[in-house]
Image (cartoon, rainbow, N blue to C red; front, side, top):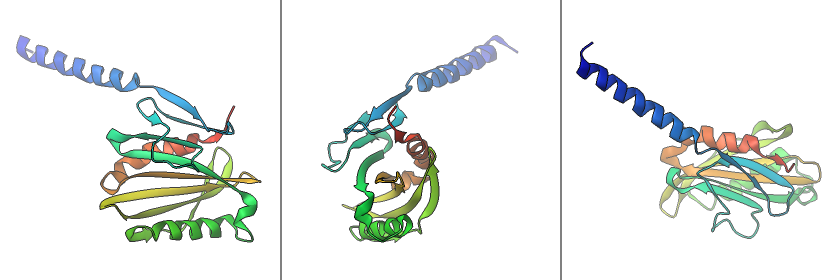
Length: 175
C-alpha cells in the first residue's frame, strides 16, 4: 500500500473513531417528575422541561434538533370510570386525533414498560401545518395511570421511533 493510500485509510479510521467517541460522550441523564414519583432516562443532548408542555405535564423532555419529544402526565385511575385501560386509551387517542387534520389512529397495542402493563396507540396527522406522529402510552400503576406522549415529525417517525421507544422503556417509579 503506498503512502497516500495509508494516509487516507488512517484519516478515515480516525474520523470514524472520533465520530464514535463523540456520540458516546453525550451520555444519558435521568429526569425525575415534578411530583417525585417517576423518572425516565433521556440522551444527554435532550433538554428537560419543555416550554409548551402545559400545566398537566409532570415530566417532559426533548431534542429539538432531532425533532423528538416526550411528556408525561398522570390520571387518577378512578377517573377513567368503568372503562378498561385499553378502552380508555382508544377513547383518549381518538379524541387526541380529532384535534388534528387528516388523522390516522391505530388500535391500542399491549405493552409492558418496566414491568407495568399498558397500551400504546400510534396517532398521525397534521397539526399547525406540520405532519406529526405520536405514540400515546398509558400504563396501569394501580391507583394511577401515567400517560406518556412521545412524538416526532412524520418524516422522522421511522428513524426516530427507536430512540423514543428507549426513553419510554426507561420510564418507571423514581428510585
